[in-house]
Image (cartoon, rainbow, N blue to C red; front, top):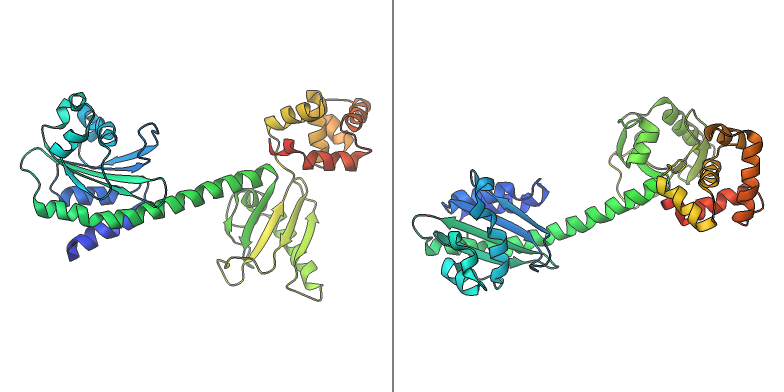
Length: 347
């Protein structure tokens, strides 16, 4: 059982450590001092030795320069410890397939414990001393940390899953030119996706003139309706490419401020090099034809697209006729729709 001081010093750092970068650095340093250990490690990852996705955090001066200490991850993983059981150095040696591989690791006293989370993650804590051995009370402290580390592992797994989902979601939204932003009536942008922040505020926190004008038009159109809370959507022509704004009614999350609006922002999808390659593969286009198709899908006219590609207008028109034939479309609107709905736009 952990005493009051240990609960304050160790448990608070353990549960807050999932938000640190690197995680758990404060906890592992406090644990090293509490155990009066020369070295202390925390490893988080899969217990499969064939999967090298481990994070090792060490709290000891000069540890990174110690070659013997760098061998600890491989040694711990090879031992195949049972979850929740405390192991001393002699116990580890008995579990290792070939203890002679780590001759320099057993000239000191060890205590290790393994913890399993709810998913694929496991955690290992290891402490060492070069002088006197650890006491029974020291071992009890490590054992008492096991259920708390298990909870921390579960939290880390949830946070990592949310981070992956958010990263993938933002990446896909960016590929199609979609973004979101919470905007207050004072024109300050709260939370926002990178796409929306760049469009409305040039990457900052306050609306740029184009973004402010767009939102003003949106609110004016909203005030002219019988239902002021209804969703509204407008298209805005600005000095940048056309952007569209949509005010979302009753969003599924609480706003960061009482007067904040949730806006969905749409701009022409950014051009990626892979888009041209995918269009050429999907519709058997030449690279120039693919570039022209992308420019037309970005709402450029034939003349504007021709200038961007250093073509004459007549040459661009000839290319557009080939595009209609190869994409089986009957005009510009169908061509734009075909391009925007193809997988190439996600390239």
